[in-house]
Image (cartoon, rainbow, N blue to C red; front, side):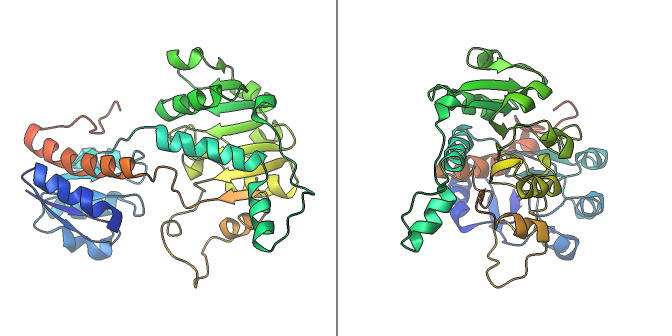
Length: 330
């Protein structure tokens, strides 16, 4: 069985070779992002694995089907970069990845702490030997109300982590998680927006959650609210975030993922002109911390993502499905 891995990174190679030793598969890799321009790369392969930088839309999926590709994995939890409905129409099987929630949950708490303790400004000052305190006064977690939007595996782990700080925790989700009920108070969305000092996003990206943070929702929040996004960039309207920072309605942003990040993250742009002016503009503010979509990025998570990506294809081909296949009801 031959599998092609797109968007392969150096840090994935050891895990890829480990899967070759465990399974009767041959895995070839390319750093290229899947596109119509390189569609012929898939010829002769039984399946392919991708990350999230390219869009597997209807046109690209049609070309893959013509070349005999009916098994695709994404080495990510999110799969909004793949037209799942069209894949299903073509008979293409698609699976996603899974990894423990701890890495993203830990990173989220780190982001909260950096925002409420003025980390970015303190770091900048220290680099130029400015050790003054003016403007760096922070707040303590125990005095805050923290709203967690989305209480799936990652949101629940964030709640567990936060429970040790003694803060008041509010939760919002369409479905209540029985484990979260013991540690947090479920409220409706408006109540969470109005009462929270810090709001952290842990929702999947769906039509119903796209831009759930927008001008209207920000208007309901406390002045000086801290927003954290270590989930999906499109959960928050970037234009609204810019306005919130400019008007000081938003006190701080901690964002590991931002709307419009495609083609920017995970690449070196030191000598480039960034194509998204709002993306470039917002990260200049003293109270905005932006990282390169790396909350997931731990050794354990990378190993798990690669294993899911390769084993998922192998099982879909040999067994007809796999644990993480994306079905009509998933």
